[in-house]
Amino acid sequence: MQTILILNGPNLNLLGKRQPEIYGSETLADVEARCRAICPAGIDIEVQQSNHEGQIIDWIHAARESAAGIVINPAAFTHTSVAILDALNTFEGPVIEVHISNVHKRESFRHHSYVSLRADGVIAGLGIEGYVAATRRICTLLASG
Ligand code: DHK
Image (cartoon, rainbow, N blue to C red):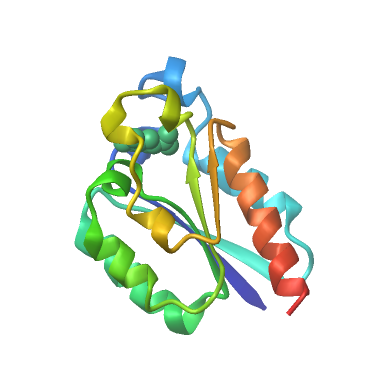
């Protein structure tokens, strides 16, 4: 069994309740159910969320041993965290960066991403369907070896 780690940064524990006009009304539990539903046999997902940068870094380090790919929505850490970029650079599998909203249509401070320097793909503005697209892409990459 291979695992895809789906990591979420600060405030995404409130997904579904927080600014639904921007982030929608579905929750992280919905993200988990939708992503698991499209995984073929032999691939499972693990969804994690933290409001703490160090915890996210620790999960990325653990993923070096336990995960085949990472889907990451670093939320606000996208725009600030060299440390999360450095952690992702220690991970050898595919990494897809997801933003629920179209960050390029929003404030200019959201236009820059440190994580994009490592990501193999970047998805923005598809709502939580972005997680599903990212998970599908990682499944494809894992299947192609
Ligand atoms: C989520 C956040 O919390 C913001 O800080 C980012 C991202 C955008 C999203 O669209 O998923 O700027």
